[in-house]
Each structure stands twice: as C-alpha cells, then as structure tokens.
Image 1 (tube, rainbow, N blue to C red):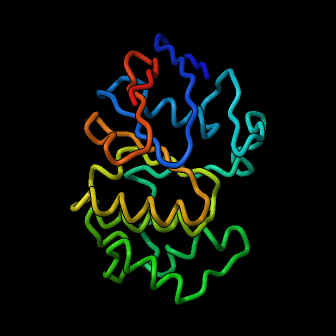
Image 2: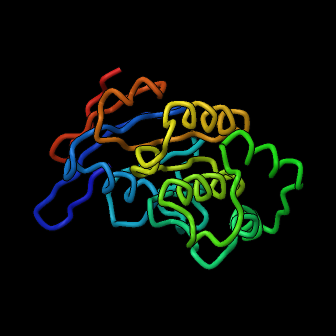
Length: 195
C-alpha cells in the first residue's frame, strides 16, 4: 500500500488476521493507512479481504467500516443508532441480540447520542459498526477514549471474532499491542511488524 499526501509518503505492507494493533506517535501515518485501506484516499497497491482483491471496489462495497471519535450520528437515540448500520443493508438485528451486545459492551444508557460523553459515543459507534456486519472494522483511536479499555477491547474482540470480523485499531501506545494478535509500528509513513 502506497500513498502520497503532500510531502508525506505512506508505504506499508501488512497482513492482518483477527485483531491487529497499529501503533505509533501522532503524525506517523496510522490514520492515513486506515483511510487508504478503507478507500477514502487515493493509493497504490492491493487490499485483499478474505483473499478477494477489493482495491478497485467502491467504498460502500469493500466490506470495511471505519470508526473514528466523530463517527456517531448525534441526533439519533442510542437504540436507533445501533440499528442504523444494519438498516443500511436491509437487515434488522433481533432485539435479544441488541440486548446481548449492549450488555457485553457496557452500553447501559439511553437517549440521544449527542447527550453522551465522548467515550460513551465511542461505545455506541463501535456497536453500530458491529451490527453492520462488515468483513473488517478499522478503529482509529476510539479505544483510547474508553474507561476499562482492556475489558472493552477483549469483549469487542470476542464479538468480532464470533462474527468473522477482523479488527485493526490504532494507538499511540505500543503497549496496547498486548490487546491484539499482531502489532505493527508506524514511523514516518512506514509500518514495521513488531510481533
């Protein structure tokens, strides 16, 4: 994967399965790499999901969802938000499944999303991404906003794995690699495999 953003050059060759941590300081290229994987910025190279080359597919057909701290839809209430991603695909998650996911992810609040804290909004956005049933969820710095980050990531990984969804999340802290099955470290636009 290669991309150029002004004077910044991105070059990364990563192979991800399960949960992957992409660690690095601000400005190292983490968000740019996620944007390139999602097809949100022009790039060269190949992106494969389940062995299928999705590089030239339209964004909405790639099977990739990206969650950022600003991903929520403020005017929706929590329940409507959780159903939103599934609704786009013509699906209706059963109420018992919604209740199960809410319980496992610590979503015990109601009301409009705009009234929630940043961390609570993150939980709702991540659950919404899960219900949209993509092949890959890209999580850009959202985990770092959460209380009980370790417990939440463990629960989210379990849900994603059970649904056949791969996760790639960014962090400024390399130690967060302990929450993933593999870690890449970004520096000046280059990703290096750490473990």
